[in-house]
Structures are given as structure tokens and as C-alpha cells.
Image (cartoon, rainbow, N blue to C red):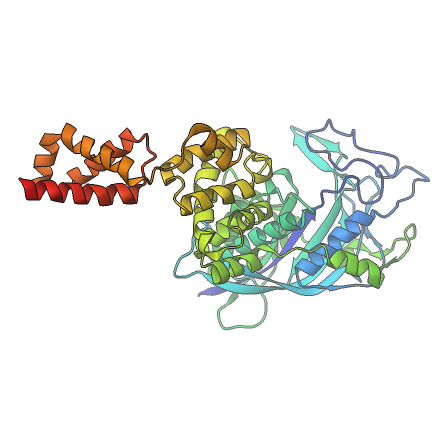
Length: 493
């Protein structure tokens, strides 16, 4: 029997605020010694009371707006009973009945997830967002041998949990959804989205049902996946596993699974909890959260144009390929660098895209620039100046590449470098004509061969002239002068 996959995604996004959700402890804990970013509040000491992190609330509203959600103007906090040892309170402060954001959607581009490339089967899809709510993160448990160790540095860090409707039907769609969500939180600047460091964790809730039927199958959740590849691979594995169980007459049980990346298999962790297991009730130590119109508007104005919208604009307005648009918009800083570098002139868009995705990315890779394009010394305005100089034939493309390398290394402007080193392209026909005649006179054998039909030797003569002019000869003028000079010598033979 053939089955349809039905997937709803739960995604936890760890915010990059300076402090935790309900206390002043530093939230920048990655790499710190265990249990050094803690205080009486996040350790649940008697008498310690929580205080709401305003920036975390604003970040949650920004995420909600970016996901086209409605923003709740009145909500309150609730306690979620939590019996695992990685939250010292024994409960989690969260939102259940009234999430900060709800009833939204996200449009995703579904491509080949293995390569990220467009294929004939690529398509755009809308995934509905049921809710996005604020809560605090748990600590981290490490199991060694027969012992377990707990680090509370992460406990209390602000989280936004995003829950979709069951609109995802393939592993590639789940991959595309998380990829798009990661782009959004990075564009907003509210999270690094670094799944390997736990800043974003995906949890598919999936089931199988016979094709053509309506009722959902038994739901299985795969917890705490920390890479896009793990999301795709775990779903594909779980589809095969459940298909074999159902086709053999067995029954799928509602459980929570983990993913063993080394073996490439899912493993059962525990029975899946239901909402009533958590025994939600209003948090008595925190006031309700009311969002005024002024506060909402101030947050709304901070939401930038997002990656997918920019991709569409770059292809429709600037004529870029879908591939170039995706590469340039994956990082907000790169997209902004590109638009400055092209100087608002659509005709220069492809040139700017080529310089950034080619020379700039190559130099960044060689130099090990990991801090992103904002750490590059060559400004986008300087690149725009260089592109204009190439366009106006002040320098040729090969000279421009060497100039750009110096711009990258020193931060100097293109014109300053060209002027200081005398690199301006030679377009004076009298000077170039002398170089052409000298090249023909110095290479009679090659000239004879060209006149005898060895057409490839023409480029040899172009190279000789460019060498004589130290690469500064205008290639178009050089080729024109060569053709005229050779033709005159042909007629004089």
C-alpha cells in the first residue's frame, strides 16, 4: 500500500538576547564553564522572582510579523509541569492558551535539498503557522557511562517555539521550511539560527496515512534535530520504518523518537506526552502581557524586507537568475552589500552579482573571513566604483581583478589604486598601434602561420600586445588594430 506523509513542524528558536528570559544572567553561554551563567532566579531558589525580558518579547513579535501572524495584544504566562532534571524549577514558564503570535504562514521554495539547486521539480509552497509562543529554554544533560551531568547555563534563555499546521508532506519540504525559517531569524537579527550550536532545533511530528484518505495516522515526534540534513534524513528513515510496520500488519505507536546520526536510525525515547500531562495553569509570579498600539508599531517598523521577497525582487527588477538571487539573499548583509555595489542601476546587477559571488567570496574564503561580509575592508561603494571603471573601459577585467585584491587587502578605493600604480587602460590608438606593429615584426613565423590559416594564432598576437602594454591595452581596440594591420600585411605579400 502507498502512503502519504503528513508532517507538522515544531521549531525552537533560541534568541540572542544579552540576558535570559526572566533574570539578568548572561544568555551568551556557549563554550562557558558549566553552571557559571546562573543565579537564584534561574536556579529556582526560594524567594527569587522572575522579571520579563522586554527585548525577548519584541523579538517574538518580530518573528510573528515576519511569519505573517496576528499578534496578541493581551496574553499571560503559564506554568508547564516539567519533571525532567534540566529545569530546576520543576516547571517551565511558557504561553499555552494565548500565544504571542498565531494564525500566520510562510512561503517556502522547495528545491533539491541535497544540493540546494533548482530543478524542474522545484516549486513554491505555503505552510500555515498555527502559533508562535515565548518560553524559557531548559538546561543541558550529558550522559557519561552510568552518570548524568546537568549544566544550567542554558536554562532560562529565551525561546520562541513555532508550530505549523500539518501542511508538510515530504522530507524536502521540511528541509525547505527550516531553511527558510533560519533565514528569517537571521535577517531579523534575533537569533544566529545555528542548529549545530542548538540555537535552532527542529522537531517533526509525522504520521502516515493511505493515499486518498482523510484521517491522520498515529503521530510520532522526532526530537531536537540539530541540522537540516538530520531533519531530512530522519524523516526519510521514519517513513521507511513506519511503512514497513504498517505493511506487515503492525501498529505504529505514539512515541517520541531521537535520531542517532552515526547509525542513521531513529530510536525510541519515551511515550509522547499530551497537553493534559503538563497540567498548565497561570503563572502567579508574572503579570499579564499587554502590547500597546505604540509598542506594536515601533516593533513592526523594525521588520526588514525578508529573503524570499528580495529573491523575487532581484529576479523581476534586476533580471538575475533564480540561483544568483538565492545566493545573494541568503544573508541579509550580503543582499544589502549587493544593492549598494550595483548602485541602483539594474544594468549593473549581473556584474555586481558576479563580483560578489565570484571574486569577493573567493577572497573571503582564502583569507578565512568568518565574521561575514561586514568584516570585509572593501566597501560596496568601492566595488561600485570599480564596476563603473570597468564599464567605462578605464581598466580591463584582468586589471580590475588585481585592483580588487588590493582593495580587499587594504580597504583603499579603486580609483586611488589605479591612479597610484598607473593601471589605467591604454586607449590611445597611436601607442597601441606601435605595440601591434612591434608584435607582428617580432614574430614573423607566427604571422606566416596565421596568414596560412592558423586562426588560433590571432590570440597569440593579442597576448603579445597586452604583454607589451603590461595588460593595460584596451582589448577591443587592440583586436581591431591587429585585424587592420594583419590585413594590410596580407595585401602587401
